[in-house]
Image 1 (cartoon, rainbow, N blue to C red):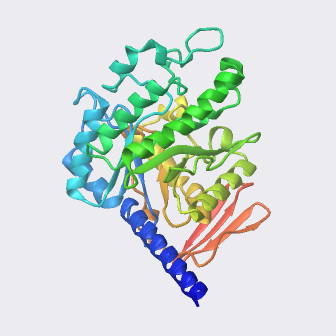
Image 2: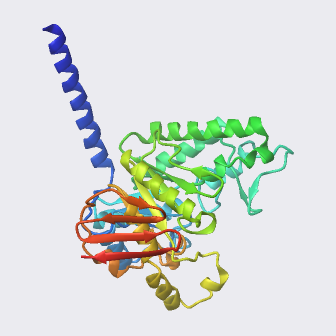
Image 3: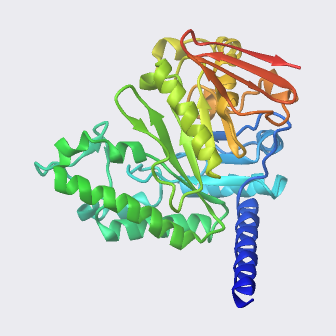
Length: 380
């Protein structure tokens, strides 16, 4: 009899813990719905958001990442720019989640915190020959193996999130940190120390932010030779797929793997942000030279394939982004007719036949051919 009561007690305890966990997740995560395509925004704008822009954003998405340099030159630094517009957005929609972009590896000078970093040369990452490790000859990299550097990074995040106006942090550049090619630059011992430093940074960030704030990281990326999946699930809530169908992730194998990794991470309960592209990016000079209306026309024409690919593998708490860059002027909040159509819940998981993917929703049927990069969405 005692064993029976003990088993009942343990079962009840497990149910209570699970219920508390789900309740906490529901509170921390943005409210998710399959009613229409779930959309997220991720951008940095020159100057502050106008009232009309803020109203549009707050009424069309509840998951926003504000990038480095946001609000400049209206505000003197990124921290102030993000704080100002986060408050504006949250006043319009109290349940919206606004995420503070804070690169985990690269020193961007448009942050006030840069002034502290710049006065600590012992925090600057150096190659094994003693020379500074730069990105693009200007941006210094963080030596994540340095505990004092990490302490400064975490304190900056805490100030802007726990004691500020945002709901979480976007930790960028994990893929750059983890690249095996870095062993040639830093040596194996330093490489290992920095990988451990990144894991420590995530853990230290979670401790500082608490369990009710979001940690988003970049991310998942599938390339012909390597696959970077959701490799940092511990202490994180969300992961981004940044290069679907573009740059080095445009092969049919890479695209299928990205979609499968989204599906896998989503089933683990993670938020997944899936960034689709119109076949071009902001680094394509010929595309960028076109008038805005022409870029928008091309984007409208090319949306079906990335959107259908997203829907093929999307799970609860998956979000779609579609534009050609990271600045406001890169179509960051452009809206498409497909975003207003009824979607409904998925009726089954993605089906794979060769390179063809199919899936049905309550109000839409999806067909994708990753080999030909053709797709159809039948809106019922």
